Image (cartoon, rainbow, N blue to C red; front, side, top):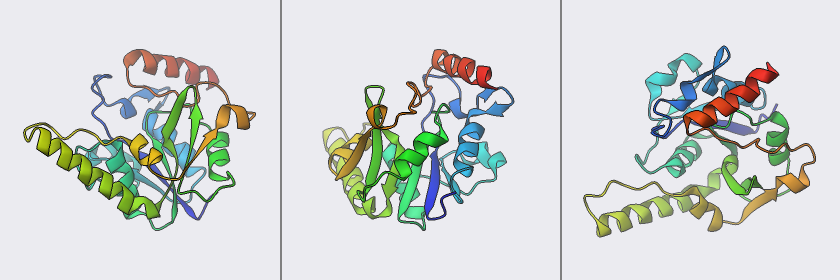
Length: 212
């Protein structure tokens, strides 16, 4: 178990494509968020939830914090996590990737690098919502959020704030992007598969129920 790294679960988003809160859907006897919570609790001494719907997750009995910057997407969730942490390194994971394994997380955490962001490239995507983010990134994130807010307001004052892209942070920072399919020999394709639509939920459910 890692004592010097805080684990954060991001439960943001409105699940518009799913039509209901995807993290509260059940797979077997457990909700999706409970599967991710168990995985994180098995690895990290301290686990915290970042969400703007605190009442929906009170049953988890986890410390919960909201975004400081509202309606700014997952980057705001990462920012809130780093503002509330007591450790320099923090493992952040989205609530909607229940196929994630302890082996992959350990590989990321123990990867030999001191860079402030440690994430992976897998399944043809940079997987920015599952990895290490250092507390020292707070000023960088705030600059991105403030700039994004300003640009949006100048173009259309009535436009709803658009979500800041985490990939912007990754590309503007000295990030370690692990080619995990090539480097981690136990990697299984689809480990980072996330569920945004009913058909994706049904696919993940079929896989996990076979393993129960």
